[in-house]
Length: 401
Ligand SMILES: Cc1cc2nc3c(=O)[nH]c(=O)nc-3n(C[C@H](O)[C@H](O)[C@H](O)COP(=O)(O)O)c2cc1C
Image 1 (cartoon, protein in one colour):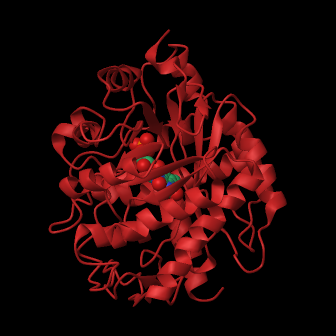
Image 2: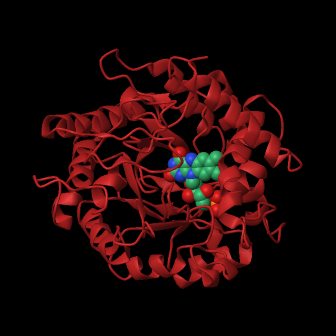
């Protein structure tokens, strides 16, 4: 049996039927009230047929103030959860051979002014990206404790809805990342300062989630191997955090990297990694040496040859594919059957790569939206047109339209 087709059992008792995961992709397809929409159900029924062993949903925000984009699914703690809509979503995601996790997130300061005019963060450190982001306010200690509770509540909701697990999004510059980074966490209380304090919010949330869901429900974390910012959260600290999460019982640790300021998740951070596809393979190897829990590696993987090599050498136990699945939802099945040599989703490269990365999100969102409308993805879709339409939507919202 190919290494790709081998099932993987997690500590909670859950078994992934194979080693290919659909990594989280924010769908931006919630109802105006922030509930999972019928389109999300249609999308996940389509994706589920593609044969991945694990489906991780796009980020679901644990409270409305944590939204990062228009159309995020939101958990509204006081109103009581919209359980039925989550149930239908969970059933759709698990309608194929794979199991499904909900990714839980809070955007913190990484939420554009058109979405959040009063964002919160560990400290009042603004995100300077073309005037798109309002300077955040620093959270109080009480608010941080409340947020820990929101992550636990959202995990419980995912469990009641029938998902098999949750993933805490501690990568890509969102709130957990902001706490981890010494550039954005300038606090002098128990939540800031030495790494032990900067990781407290993540560790406390992980513990609270585990308490809320019990031992038979999978809990995963997506962690940056590095933010790739000078003086920021880097690979040595990431290894220490990974070791702590392992000791705290995390069952599947996904390795990624980058933030809005340095989008290494979309564009390889170094030439050598671009040549070799897997953006964060060196980091996964380093973390592999420090932890015993299963690792998932996501970012840039495109060919069955490299995917198999990564699994065979043991640097990761599961590989995550995002853009390739948005473009070719049946790719996992084709890889497992040995029927494809490479994904058609080519990551941006060359001197204009970072510029091209700006169009990546919108273009792939549009592919997900097409599937939500019952259509197939369209590789010929104009990138410029999708960028302009996304910009128009943002502008209209900023103007209050
Ligand atoms: C449209 C889109 C939305 C994304 N949304 C999320 C998200 O909600 N949570 C997350 O952890 N990563 C998100 N990502 C990043 C992917 O999970 C993945 O880390 C990244 O695309 C690199 O993997 P790939 O080369 O296989 O695409 C998103 C990527 C795309 C293209």
